[in-house]
Length: 461
Image (tube, rainbow, N blue to C red; front, side):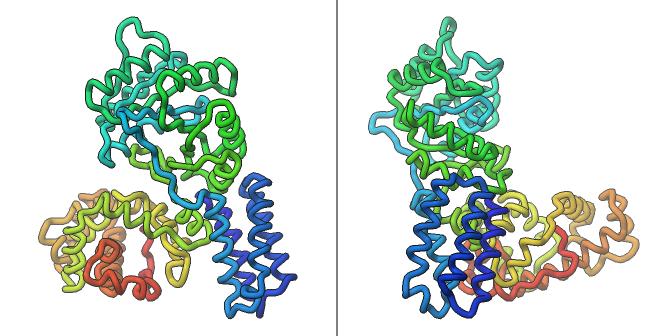
């Protein structure tokens, strides 16, 4: 997400750094480029106008013009203004003092309401809540069955309705009673959508709002539709009073215009983003982290949170000790790959890294997930003894391993070469990324190590 905008803004700041000092002329030129970059990212023109004016007022102050590093000052100002546009701080969900808290999930047809309902239910369950889901979409074929399938996948209970309950209000009323009787503290109501906003849809949603008294009315929008998503959110807010927005398909939106516009246009916060198809590809939206990613500063906090969720801290610390003792084996190498893949695709992990120093080169690494699979297959084809002592893998063993993994001897040779180089790299990294991130003994030294980190030749995975 934000890839195109991030690239263009970094180019602007690079040009500013090339100036001997900041002047009104080169600042105006930079602001023009920032304006164009934002508009090309499909950011609402009103948002662009406000942001540029705010940056100009602050950037042309005497303190910035006379600073030793004016370009860094301008970057800081742009970051602050982006955070304001995005919402200043994380907007948390609200809950009722008298459970169950009802969340009404609304939006146009095809925006991802049903999938988002399931993802939000899973997120709530992982964070100490006991959700119940219900679909009141009686119009779209198999809409309620779709939610039923999702609910089974994530092990969340669903209210499917009793005989004779054919109307949305009847289903919603019974679902709320079921949540109360079964001790569920949150009820998520997946509502019907339309291809466009109409009075019938809004009338039905108003009925549900009056009946259920929801603490959250969350509008689901497809980020790929850009300003159309913003206009729809604005219209839903005028007619229904939404309390927040969930943007889906953020992983496929390189522009980010909807995310940058929706808070300013509707006055309501962006609360969650969908970043993939899997049930866990769903994240709270943090304005400060998004601003940092846009400006190439990375998102280390999100990486750490993902690592803490999917990686065993004790195992990570044991791995770190093995690296320090030069005992990092191919078995460990395979386990490290598996742990990293739990966090997400390597592409998504690399995008969380700050684009500074040697780490900037990581942004250009072409990740081949198929190569990762081949690496694991090759190591799986080794005997335990071979995995624990790569030095014994001679020509005959390499041919056997290649045959067993469906690869070539050349592939096996390449893996062993990459393994030995990566072993050296990770040892110099004092425990590897996971060990350092998760607070091992050398975690405090990690910032210094990052700038010195070298990628071995052929590190194609």
